[in-house]
Image (cartoon, protein in one colour):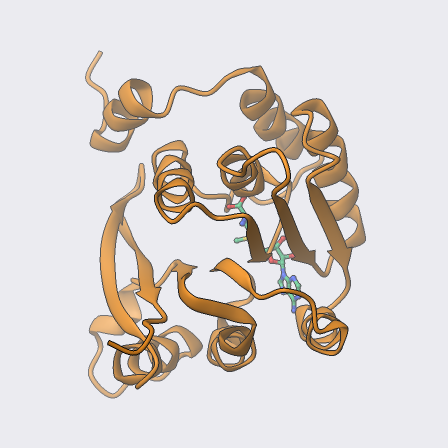
Length: 215
Ligand SMILES: C[S@@+](CC[C@H](N)C(=O)[O-])C[C@H]1O[C@@H](n2cnc3c(N)ncnc32)[C@H](O)[C@@H]1O
């Protein structure tokens, strides 16, 4: 049988263990949409977190914690990840999946609209995050960019999924992702690239940006 390109990469570089397979199975059982990152993209997120030695990660958009598991597994023993989810039913599935992956101690799932959770994080004046991964409602992306940047440390990574939808190719079309891409590309406090990622059906994009320090 012929694999698709993403299947080939995932099988070789991002094989799923029981916890990741069960997480997807639980999401299917709960009739949740299949809009999690692929295994190959999860591995890229994991690798990026390791490369920068991330100890604190913020994720906006949890679903069933599939990407959360990939990211949290890159953390050192004292590392923490906070993930934001608006849907309490999805959050309940995410908590079960995290427990099965032995990650309950490292991961906090904050339930509610991301903008409210971000306000709480701003006023808590905690240590800045090493990495922020944006993967929630697409119209919210430009606002998440504005709100997440002050929470990111200098040298930290800002990542955003689903940044290459078809409508970016339509001149004059407007969307939250198009505005987000334009703002991230031109942002004076970011060095940004948009990397195409494979999906079983076509391609998508992962935006990767670093918040550079002064040289
Ligand atoms: C694409 S899914 C996240 C997928 C997940 N990151 C993964 O790859 O496994 C987007 C999630 O964002 C959540 N979401 C949508 N709008 C939100 C909001 N305003 N605040 C918080 N979460 C939101 C949705 O309920 C959904 O679970």
